[in-house]
Structures are given as C-alpha cells and as structure tokens.
Length: 578
Image 1 (cartoon, rainbow, N blue to C red):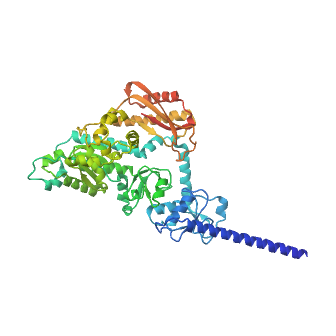
Image 2 (cartoon, rainbow, N blue to C red; image 1 turned 90 degrees about the vertical axis):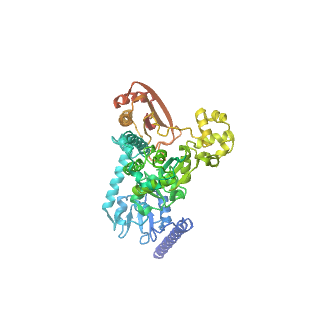
Image 3 (cartoon, rainbow, N blue to C red; image 1 turned 90 degrees about the horizontal axis):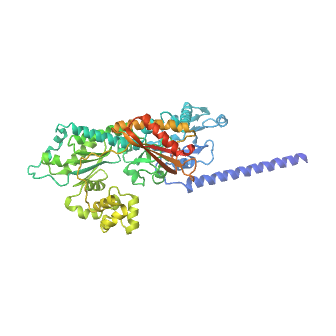
C-alpha cells in the first residue's frame, strides 16, 4: 500500500509538472503572438529578417525601444529566451553566475549592434559586438566594459573635470555657430580692408555681359542659405545615405534613441515630421528609420570658409550672418560688368558652391534684405527665387506673418489675442500702426508695420554690427556638492571668457552672473541625463572700475556675485557669465 501511495504521489507530481509546462508554453506562445503579430509595427526594412532577440537586464536603449527597432526592421522579439530558437540575447553585461551557465552556441550581443546596423542601413558583422560566444567572454566585451566605465566615471565627475569647460565648448553646436559667425565676419572685413579690386571668379560670368546694358536691375540683394548644412557636410563622407532621412545629433551610444536634440535634418526626415530642435526620442516616433550622425565641427569651419571664399571671388559686398547664411549685394558687380540677369549669376555661383563643397544652396533675390530673405523660403530646397520690385505689394499680402524675420510664437500669440485670428500679412496690414506700437512697443511695432508691407528701412548693407556682449553659458553637466567646487569651476569659465574677449577684441565693464537653480517642484534626477531640467533663473550684476579682460579680475568679481546669491549648491544646474 505504501508503495502504491508513493507511486500515486509521483504520478500526481508529474501531472502537475506537465500541466505547468503546458500552461507556460501556452502563455509564452500567447505573448509571442501578441508581441510579434498583434502589436507588430509596419516593417520598413529587412535588416534583421530571420533574427530573433531576447533582452537581458538593463540596456541602452531599453528593451521597449529595442523591441520596436527589431520589429521595424524585419526581426522578431522574444519575451522569454528559448535555446536553439532565439538568435541573440541582447545585453550590456552579464552577471558572473549567468555567464558561467552559458551553453554552446548561445550568443550574447551588445545593443549597439542593433542601433549601428539601423544607422548604417545594413546588418553589421556580429563579431565586433559579441560579448560572449560559446560561453567564452570576448575581447569586445572588455572594450565595451571599459567604455561604460569611462562614460560613467566621466558623467559623475562632469563639471569637476579640469577639461570640462574646454571640452564642452569643443562639442557645443551653439558655440560653434556663434564663433564661426564672428570668424566669417572678421574674414570678410579683412578681405575688404586689403582688397585690390581683383575678382578672379568673374571670368565665369563673362558670357552674361549685355551689350545693350543701360542700368543695373533693381533686385540685386541675394540671401544665400545652405540647405541642411550640417547634413550636407556629413553626406560628403556618407554618399550612400543620400536620399535617406538623416539627422545630426550629439547622441552617441544610443545612436539616435534618447534626449539629444536634433541640430539639422535632411528634407527626407522633415517629410516624416522631424524638425530641427526636436528630441531624438520624439523624432523616432514619426520617423523610425531616422539615421543619426555625429557633428563634424572641423569640417563645418573649413567648408564654411570655402563658401565665403567662393563668394569673395565675385564681390566683397558680403554680409556674413552665420556659417551657412549670408547676404550678397550684386549691384556693383552688375554695374561693373554690364550684366542685367541676376538669376544667371546666382545659378553660376550655386553650381560652383555645389561642385567645390558638395553643398546645395538656396538663394532668394529681392530689392532689400527683407524681400531676399522672404524669397529664400520659396527657393528651398536647392533652388532660387526672385521677387520683382513691382510684385512686392501683392506678393507680401499672401505671406504668413510667422514667415517675417523675428516674428516668433510669442509675437504671433500677442497679435491674435489683441486683434483676433490672423495668419497672413494682408490681415496684419489692417491694424493701425499706433495699435501695434501700443501692443509691442515703439521699435518692434513700427518694424512689424513696415515688414508686413514689404518695407525694409535697413539701408546700410555693409554696416558693421557692433558686438555688445560676450558670454559663457553652460547648462549641462552642472552637478556640485561643495562650494569650493563651484568657485573652482567659475575660474574655468572666466578663463574661457577671457579667450572670447580677446578674440572679439573687447573688454568688460559690466559683469553678470546668471544661475539656473532647480525649481522646488522639479525632480532631482532630470529626464535628460545631467541636463538642467526645470529651473528658476537668478541674476546678479556688478560694474567694474576700468574695463577688463583679465581672467583673475573676472574670477574675483564673479565669486563675489556667487556669494551674494548663495544658492543651495546641490541644486545648481546652470552657470552663465556675461
């Protein structure tokens, strides 16, 4: 009887085990069906066709984003790992205990294999990304571990790093744009001061000379804007990506999945809803196949100067705006060479820019800088457009108010709140000048009144704009615990400010310190890693006796301002000195 009882117990246990196994198999099958069939995204490529992945532990990007990525590109996502069926386990590292239990032919691969393959547009060789193969750790795993350690260590020290400020500005897109704008202005001014009257490139347009020329055309102001400049520079070295949605961003390890902002994106990306300034994670929602490439700061500087050099071969009546935007006045060229066809001149210049730099330029032409800039909106992408003097009155009426220079969301909102729904310049033309001045102030009100009528009061094309301030502004990576750390960091900022003042040939008579302090209701850990998050701004200013550009003097004054503000050190998120 005892034996029969044991046999019955064993049989019952076996039945329970079988039932549990059947339950789990059914559950897994159901989940697999839900994940890979019911909730599957539209496939946009076959990069991972025949590939299945299981995500183990924390990864960057996280499992949810990897699941979306593998589905979009033809692969399959497994909720549970199944030996012999699952192609790869995706992980950034494995615990020692799990690593010892790995079986033959199990492959542990880094998530960067997925993101890199999508970025390049083809399935990359697995050998450069496998962490474990046949149960043995690879040399690649050690490399990734070292990278992760360095990144973590660097992030934790961030602003305490002695090279943080210099590295920050080396990788700052806004700093590059500001610096290049000043460099190009100085470059053009130097060419103008040393000009000999020789313009070698004019030989390219001799065929446009008009024997019956009587006077130069009225529309000679040209607004030149390089199309998606950062992207165009990148495509010089990645021609295989031409025609694909491409974005330029700081994003590295995630290769386009995260909180980095898009600095520039191709028209193919824009067609799918991507915009400059939007976050990568948001861009991925509208454009899953977005390809992200890093900045190429040295190339931007070199190519920007080359473009200005091309223009200086025709004329020195150039007004530099930035590294990829400028105005050119062709009046003297047309008058000197007896050319009446400005559109043909611009066509020749655009062709030369494309041939020498690989970058497309859109050009708007008008009788003023305002009309030339508006014309550029109609020239894009990669075209040219002219607004004739006699067409301005009718043309400007149908222009959007938001397309006028300097008219952003805030001004548009004020106009609509005060005067009702309006979108076109002809709507704005109905508002009397006094009401605009009362709403927006004397200067801006008058300016908008004129612009919506196509009137531009700017007459001095080559007027030198006097720079009024120089600043150092850092709102990323700012994390301190001690006051002495902050004071030391201020010294680094003042050293950078000294360099900027010397480059701008300026001195400071007024010094302002602005701090970004974590808002009381803001989380301590920001959504964007080491970003500033929601903050309150506090500003203090001091007047210096005798203008200075000396870092020691600057540092001494800024330290006094810091003590006057006396912030909670651990809540400091951004520092600006100007």
